[in-house]
Length: 135
Image 1 (tube, helix red, strand yellow):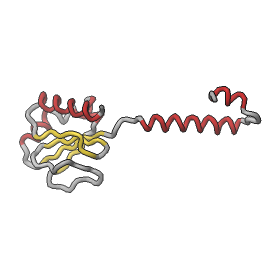
Image 2 (cartoon, one colour):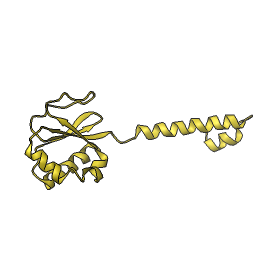
Image 3 (cartoon, helix red, strand yellow):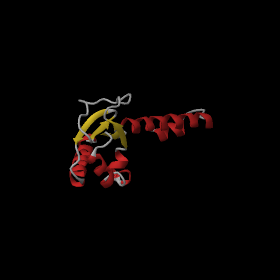
Image 4 (cartoon, helix red, strand yellow):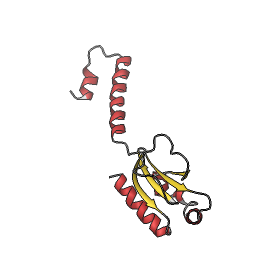
């Protein structure tokens, strides 16, 4: 039955019943939107003190990363390569090299960049990983 017809013809409908009906309809719409919500993405950066390539990434990418579309889609989380993984993080294999960038989709590895060879290398691979993770 069409909702408009139900709204107008429900016998004995009082404002409180109408409010309840509207709330139920809204709740269904919110649930449907949540079911299609984008995955939760984040980018882990594994680093170690004294890593020259990590310092280069810090100089070239770190200042702008949070303001980019990629940075907003996958916020950066920095981790020492020797520290235990945060709870809820699943990697396909341990990080061995620094820097290693791991794209997480809902807490699970969706892509990886090992090393840093410059801006074009980083952005190109990250864009490809993000596109695959959100398909």
